[in-house]
Amino acid sequence: MEDTITQAVRKQYEAYSYPPPIEDAEAFLKQWGPLTCDPRFAGIQLWPEGRPRQELRILCAGCGSSQAPLIALNNPDCSVIGVDLSETSLAHSSRLRDRHGLKNLELRQMSLLDVGQLNRSFDLILCTGVLHHLPNPDAGLKALADVLEPSGSMGLMLDGKAARTGVYQVQDILRRLGVGPDAEGLGIARELLKFVPQHHYLFESTGKLPIDLAQDAGIVDMLLHPQDRAYSVPEILEFVAAAGLIFFGWNDNADYCADRFLSGEMLALPPAEQWAIVENLALLNARHDFFVRKPQSAHFQVRFDTDDYLSYVPHVRSGVKLAGDPNALVLSRAASQGGRDADIALGGPDAGADR
Image 1: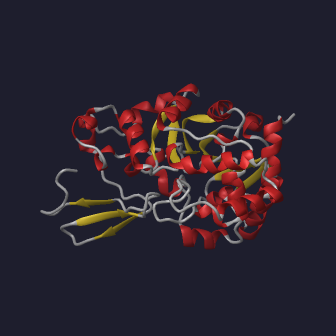
Image 2 (image 1 turned 45 degrees about the horizontal axis):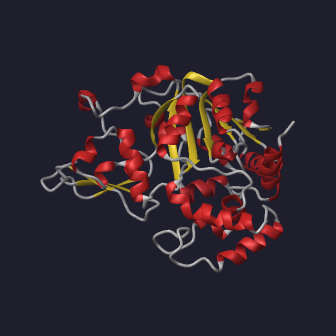
Image 3 (image 1 turned 60 degrees about the horizontal axis):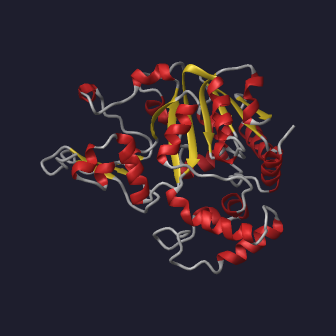
């Protein structure tokens, strides 16, 4: 039987499916590119030692309106299961499955807490923007860990604490006004947003409201959610360890890279301490995208505190563009949440020798 919070969360996503539904998965991928943890493009991050098998068994836990179809479309050789509480969200996913003839996609209406009832194990589990909405996130991650193959990998996303300060301030205002995730609450939230001053923490450095607030579902999900918590870097590492898993790296290390912001003795701190400092200093991470695996995978971790890095082969990952002449190759990422591009120069007499 569902608890009160789970009932409220399911009811919200039945009324306001999120992310907003898409009509054509191929057109979406062409415009926006692959999802963060798509194994077709993020394989080197998921499995530095090499992919465990070609025909991956993939679980999209809390798949929403489109994640599972997008993963299934980009990975036709893999079997994909999408589970979600919301019948409405699954109906959108089902339409995409039918439109694109995705015979490798199965959809189930269920809580991710019950994935053990599938009686299957998975090479890859994707759970993005879901665990922080559970009454007990620890129980959710443990349930996923129990169905992860020993050589499997998990791609997670949790809301970040420091960079979302303004979100929680506005949430607090709306709670004091006694509104909920319904049409009345949505109207009051829209009216409140008209009075948010330009210097408020809700705004990005560009002076624009977060893109999620452009649509009803985004407003409800960000400002009116009945269950919403955020994680700092230390809390993420504790969360992962409590589930018996190991932290396996950030999706984009540039947003946590201490030498972009710090110098001297601060760079002698352990990596986890550097990440925590950068999170609170740079305010780049409104969301944390990262990978976890089981402890037996620890020896596959990429490390730069030993001489192991001397044997690494550079790999240009998805989302990185190439520019420059043959003697000064520049790798450029898309603008980060802080509005900056992260560029790395390689080779040539003028390339950054301090990197």
